[in-house]
Image 1 (cartoon, rainbow over the protein chains, first blue to last red):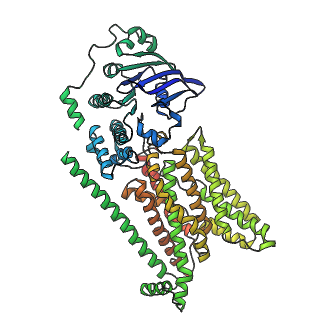
Image 2: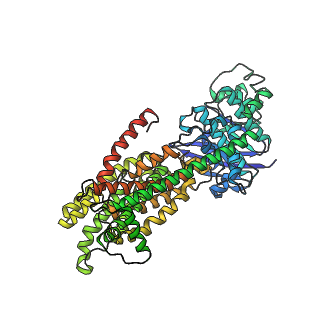
Image 3: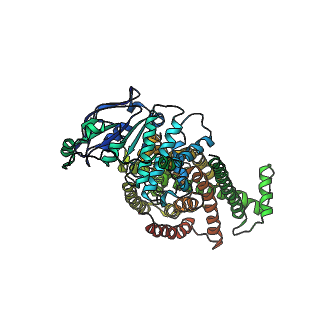
Length: 270
Length: 359
């Protein structure tokens, strides 16, 4: 499969040091790529460079072969969605309104009721449909995260009417979720990848990363230290070097957490 | 899926109904306070007579009588000026709060009104000195232009100070606004020191805020500034909704963030500049109106911006009617009235927020 997203030698400097240092990374559609590494390794910065939020000081990022920084925001919004780490709202929007932001003004040939259906379906998929009329400001951290997941799902769904080769970026998407919703969110992301999207996530939980990723990117000090299948990247030697922990082999359990099939459907239907 | 579809239809009609009711209620309120505003005052005019005079004027008849003169030459321009300025101030407040992602932002609080007033004062005092020998007194139409320039310079200065590397820091902007406000206050003090008796009266008028100088000339002078900005503001609604998630999130949703911010700054400067030129500094309308509407109708700017314009117009016209009648035949400057109501409201907002969100 050809690369949807292609970064060549990208660097980014912030606060007087190199946060991302000459990284090459090419990401294909249909793959779930998870970026791992210790705090300050440059994972989130890399994600922001790949999503177009930051412009690299050196090197270039191409999406569908087109230079990322030359794509206007409205067109970019059809090809990729980004779920932020945490998001505060200063105004009392309802959960439904927040999810609708993902579907408004994006996509072609969608009627108003199409957009509302997209937002409601996305809320159901993220298991927050029951909160639709609630004020976003009154939600817990985990609920907020799921609402933003619904918002990016709605954006992808609306954008699909224009561009099908999409990229989804998730920056620590499960940081404040409970176990059930952690697994449900990652399963949904994984099924999007199976549908042909390129999904790129920053994750801290190595066991979940090992179980979910098709492709692991291990970062340290702004550099990509290792990349490949989880079993090739998560070796005790590499982890000891990067995280400074000594692990008894095997470093990870042979079978990571997974939702049982019926449970996963129940979580998906909300 | 059927349940979901039903629920969806249900919700859509509920939302549309609520919006229709809100706008209908605001329109009725606006008409009522307008009729009251035309009828009430030092000389009372019954509503039926108000309608008759206006109908005559619209059909081209020349109506005689003192009450016709009061309505057509005194109260009608004052009413229109109040409607325009109330709408401009309230929707500028909503726009600015959306831009700064802070429900406490207000053109009056962060120095934009003061900057506009300072420029208007400079136009009066210096304009008279420089131009008086050649063309006589300053034409009134120079004031909105001057005040607009002052508002724009202040907004732009705040924006430059608060923006580093393409990101606007809201906290810096609010604090810089306080400094600008103080600076403009010093400038006003300097001008009042330099001015003669007549100019001093005009300056006091600007700092207190009043609709008492309303004339048809003023209405005609500020309409081309205020009306286009009111009609343009709703086009920024989607951008402002997305901006409330954060600038990065708005960009991810396809919003041209810098362009939306620049447009919002320009519109606020034009609307506030024109308002200050015609009526001086009238505070707190821009904070009270959007806040009340958010409690009633939610935060969506597609509803909030037009609804703020309607309620702002109604509020300012009612406040002006009270200001004219409470101590008739004397008049209270309307800025005193709005500050007396608005400042405690602002404090109540602050106290309430401490229980909930951090500032």
